[in-house]
Length: 296
Image (cartoon, rainbow, N blue to C red; front, side, top):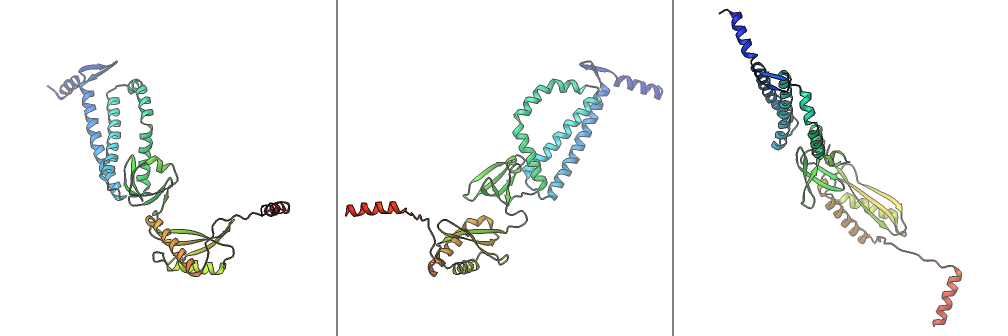
């Protein structure tokens, strides 16, 4: 038997029809082609997963749950693409399969809309690295510390010790204040109002001394004392002091308020409270005087 005859026999075996998918015959050759494509897909998927893990490690992502989720998604995406290539290589019309599953896909898409939104937001957060575990954030008016970042949600802890599960889309789609993005320096502020008869130069001097004596303040930048406004019942001042621990901001403001109270009491400065002056027109004054005279 010649080599050409052997090739002819092999070709006949490979062209042997096993079954039909619609109008497309499936042969031994097409099955072997599909098998080779699937094997190549698995190999490519492993290479890509290894590359993703290395890239995440270089970016500081060490959480196994997050790394495993992203690696799994890469694996699914490559595997689905490989299956599509394998079916196309076998001569099976993918358009027919897509048309059959289109209705199901639309319904599934609506059902998983929020999940997909949170997943995409999680990928953005993990890629940009603008928020990391340990950061202090203000999300929707609540100050929290980031504990863990997942592909769907971020786990945070409030100052009251409560653990919250925040959807990643809520972080990406809203304005978030990150106190520790570049550094942890922030400015603590306290406001106080004094009566109009106060010696304003003395008030400023006392407030500046209070700010400089705070043990937790940073030496630079220097504290600021501002006369904010002339209120209805008081002249309002603001004391601004820089600190490097945003998690304890409320304690810092409380300490500053207590120091201001003690210093004002020591120097005889009166903290204002709301007052209302009532003035009567002359006819009203005369009427009240007559009523008083009659009553007496």
